[in-house]
Amino acid sequence: MLQGVRKAEGEDVAHTMADLGRRARAAARRLATCPPDAKNKALLAGAAALRADAGTILAANREDVAEAEARGTKGAFIDRLVLNPERLEGIAKAVEDIAALPDPVGRVLAAWERPNGLKFERVATPLGVIGVIFESRPNVTADAGALCLKAGNAAILRCGSESLRTSGAIAAALRQGLAEAGLPQDAIQLVPTADRAAVGLMLAGLDGNVDVIVPRGGKSLVARVQNEARVPVFAHLEGICHVYVHAAADLQMAKAIVKNAKLRRTGVCGSAETLLVDRACAATHLAPLVAMLLDAGCAVRGDATTQAVDGRVTAATEEDWRTEYLDAIIAVRVVDGLDEAVAHIETYGSHHTDSIVTADEAAAARFLAEVDSAIVLHNASTQFADGGEFGFGAEIGIATGRMHARGPVGVEQLTSFKYRVHGTGQTRP
Image (cartoon, helix red, strand yellow):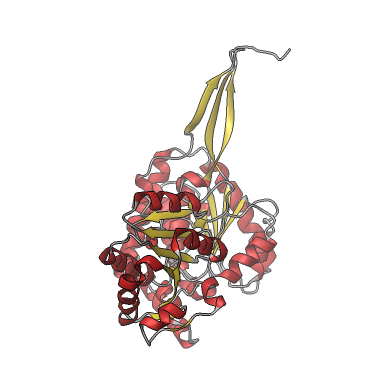
């Protein structure tokens, strides 16, 4: 077995998971007061280990991919699983970028003094132990582990069975970085079994040792986490993202944005799943947009107006407006202006990421104000829904709830706070 991954065969899963929780809590206590330089040293050493262990990691990935292909896994899922030298270099670079970020722990978020002379400070603190449950993306192992470490948290990472070998090799490199920096290797632990019982135990909190759960995966995984978790959850259920081509949109800009938003990587949660075209520009914009998508290999499911402009378009059903395809498929609808576009997004969207393409600043301002999504964009692709693109180094996920964290969850969102109060002997009357 790879370093950092322990066999669970023959062991009681509950015992294994309880042990992970206890060791994570002990590591979190040490990290909470760890100097920034030590965390950064561990991250940089981990990035170096990722590069040095590239052969091992890529070999493990080839085994995972071959096994997934043998099971008949579809292409978009395989794309999320596959690593190559360029993607692995991107993973290592993201870890270095996280090391370069300002340390989020100990930041004074607010300070004030009361008339009685007491001085108050609200100060950022680590959350503690973060459980991350994810499916096929092996890069999440590095992103989540590095972000949690930077914010002074311990991480328990549970990947899907399809990426267990790859994630194990990546976790081993990060743990090597921790050891080189003199920090506890238990700060980053990968659940060593694909047994689904491990997920249930994490959701129950591992005897109070897990402080928050972050799921990254498909609708069924996230729904299970939200339904069963006994600890707080940072989650999005799915990424039903829209691009709205407004009446005042430049056609060439719209074509570039729509193509990128849908087809740059179809398997990411920021991929556009629905295209809305304003009826006021449909005569000039709809056919070129649809043809561009079809010619690029994207299936188009459209309303009656969209079907009429190209015989290759198939009929969209009510379910298509609610579907996260994560594939080269898009639903297209013509809408009567901004109000109907916003109403469609409110009805069918998932509060993840939505974009308007327009030269009309007033229309853009209304869209950005009225669309209730974690990320709203003007004249930009929905594929910018990524913590790295926000300057966060990476992300642990995109949160679409309204409590604590929303949008890309980076190092700052992985902290809580406490109040420090300084007195000179005051007592309360």
